[in-house]
Length: 353
Image (cartoon, rainbow, N blue to C red; front, side, top):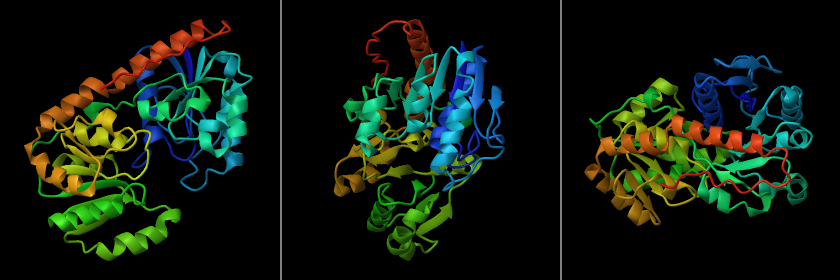
């Protein structure tokens, strides 16, 4: 198949540290190339890929520079060659929808973020222009107005993650230092249990006040240690040596990719049962999905009874990049075949865990 993959322009591919969407686009692109498909990747010029790379911007714009006019220009640039492809896969949210409406080949839009509630009229107009795919069952169920055609779980290249079963005595939090990610809850849990916590993350401008008021006062670099978000090598070391990853989210996160990364390294996850958590975590085997802070504390204590090998095996079986690619290949073929038909049936192509 001749496939176009359209990536966001904030980060180069593959991302150095932060960038879940970018990691998925990069992994899927490389996997499709390995399978013999003719893939063109639309991404920043400093990206690295085995596919054909086309770029409007020579360098990634960086966080905070994804202004609408830049994103629209990138979408326009990416769709200008639409007729050359059998299928176009957009990972740029609503920016690609106006161009999808007039594209001759079928378009897949993966919803890496929840975007519908921002403008009902906009999405009512564009709800039929492409095949929308959610990244979890939970996200699929929460977006009925967009006529999402199914869900495909994200997958990772497990071989890129170092397995470790000799755990050290620390808890780990990785991610945005924000209220909805629960960095403050992770700190409270560590203090209550008198445990060491490594807090590793990115502080966006919008969350500066949260960091200054709720996080910084507790950082003593002895029990509560903070460091900026690390590159892949450092993250592997942090994951594989941690006793468990804390994921106390306070929102319906469509897909928590760091859970897969931690599990691939043999490290169980203790999470609040929100969003896609219950689709990833098998309670009592590779981690715990809980509903209260007290249960969160108990689960942190109980992770010592879990086998790191079960954690990695779970990702290999259910969340590999190969499985994700298999499902997208099936979807591409279905919508290419159905492109000239007036009705496309629902494609429930996700896998239940």
